Length: 448
Image (tube, rainbow, N blue to C red; front, side, top):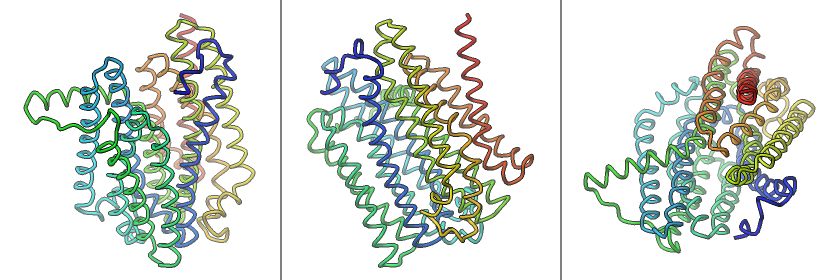
């Protein structure tokens, strides 16, 4: 593997970080670009209400994706250990258990949410005006979660099995197909928001089938294996899944934070502004994954360097890497903030006609929303550092602070204090409070 030729203990830190960061960032941003293109088609081809309806349905799917990523990360780590110990059967059992569990979670999710789509829509913050669009979009996009779960878990397995190029195509082909089908369903066929959901469902189904086809029939080592249904086997499955979840929980918390941001934002914008407010916020939510992926790319690029040198006891290289990662986080955060402050009209006009009320609300709100981004990326980078040096508890605590403890009250109280502007500033309050806690924790431990 190419990574084996990189000496993590001797190569200069700036060069090491650059080797990891550039391809990681480009890969993650390319996936976000496909999602944004999907939103552009919906906004331009159907309208702001359609964007709002899509945004209302997305937050639960992000939680399901987080659970799947948690299982994928955990299964990958556990299987790697088993393969290193020449125990391929145990590795195959773990990846099969992860895929079965992910499938079961999605089926339960579908049964709970699609039994009454209207009730689910109301819980997620839909108005009566948006409800018809939500009911059209929801069933198809929720079914898509099954194929997305297979991809989220399976891509870790495929890379571990030694086929990273095939894993790449499992992302690229569905992404390109989604763009093509979105155009066909929305414009020539005039299928509306249901057409957009069907396009996404078909595209993700292709990706899911590619993943499961490889693991089921073409994998070198990590093929699916028949699981036993005895009491002992079920107990072992529960134990294995529990351990996988423990290892991969940070991935879940990261996705859950994005899901909580969308859910609370939808609820508050609907309450204070209405459909146009949710439509405006939905545009911000299409850009949020770009910010998230930048922070994620920095954390993932620093992780192998930090972990390796932490294991060697090379404290100076650990500190140097984290310092570079933090500087990169601040720099990238400032660049993204400048884009939102100085070019909101350009960014919004990609999705909606600038004369629409939702577009005007978004243009006014983007500069306020962007005040969070430096702290947003800093927090992701810092949490990644704690994971890299095996400080699991601080990483979980800070992830919960930014995703639940500070975020929910901020969305509730900020609009009461500052009106509609307070909704846009809620993320800033949550992220800066988390940053202060991280800095306080660091200073406290440094002085001990």
